[in-house]
Amino acid sequence: MFIDGANLYSTTRALAFDIDYKRLLSDLAGRGNLVRVLYYTATLEEQEFNTVRPLIDWLDYNGYSVVTKPAKEFTDAAGRRKIKGNMDVELAVDAMELAEHVDQIILFSGDGDFRSLVEAVQRRGVRVTVVSTIKTQPAMIADELRRQADVFTDLVELKSTIGRDPAERAARGAA
Image 1 (cartoon, rainbow, N blue to C red):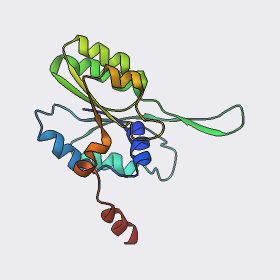
Image 2 (image 1 turned 135 degrees about the horizontal axis):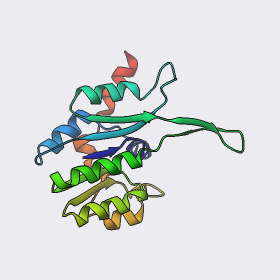
Image 3 (image 1 turned 180 degrees about the horizontal axis):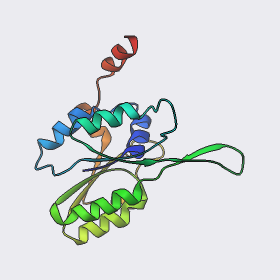
């Protein structure tokens, strides 16, 4: 399983729910032989407190392989501070390397840049399930990626299974 962290975060924000990563891992492990679960994200290491760090640490200690690289900060032509941290190449390389060892890949991303990757692993006999959503305006999944996938699963359909209980977040915030 491959998780494009930034893309999944944007998708769940648009759908107004949080992923319970413990439930996600448990649900997927119950469906078959889970070889590896990889979570990709860029980080701003120079910040004193990085908001994604607690999640990265939790994932690292709880069955996920976390792949990170430092994000690059720059100023655009209009003088706005921008952050760039694309993990597409790292995810694609890992997927191609693992393709010979698996018969199915689950990709949590709606990024159309992955269409060619999906096609390439399919040529190696691997079935690909893509998880994203069409329930937002605009849809968070690129049409070409959805068409290329063997199976498309809308994240909305998984909300009751892998969504975090909103009361849990409220309780933590009040503590």
